[in-house]
Length: 247
Image (cartoon, rainbow, N blue to C red; front, side, top):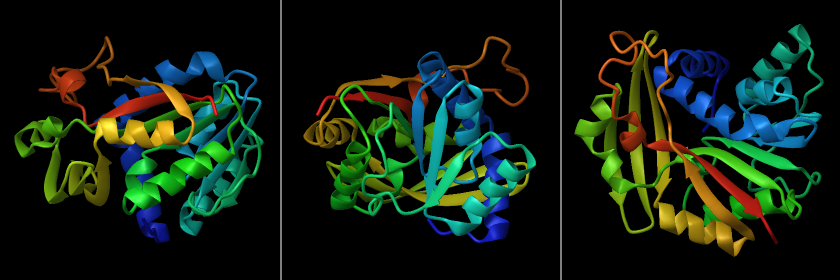
């Protein structure tokens, strides 16, 4: 996905303000925070550094962010210049990254959904594995891959519209429109069916595959931004993918 500077800034604000992304960040924090302290972390598809900076603040020893988008990385570098956390950023696609190190934890914010096809997905996961060692954990804010959750009536409850462009056993090719305070954000994602995605991960040496659902916070404003979201745990099109590289 290519970004110009204006769109990069708008998308960054979207991730900060859209209630759905708040729940995704909270779910990732529950999964990652207790295991990230004093670890080396590679954040793939880091964008403007939103997740990257959270990982460092949660106690990671070293964090490296990688993204293909120059405008997104410029935003990340600006934030680093304003508030230095010692994060390193590299520009590369995941498919062409190769081995840049050996990391304790690898993360991805909505990463695998930007694979163009099944071959591209396999190449992305292969490059994740290249930067892992035995015991490395991968945590991804990924599409759940449970097809029934992608029905229009379900997604409308969460201010998201969907158009299915292609559907097959391995994936959905879908266009999403999310409505938030600054207007609409549109994006196209590949939604890989959960069992198929698991099979590709296993092919490249990952096991102990688990999924952590989104949850409403205890103090959620059910009459405000989370109105009508009581079923988010069962409906969510995104969950936290958690797996271990075993080689």
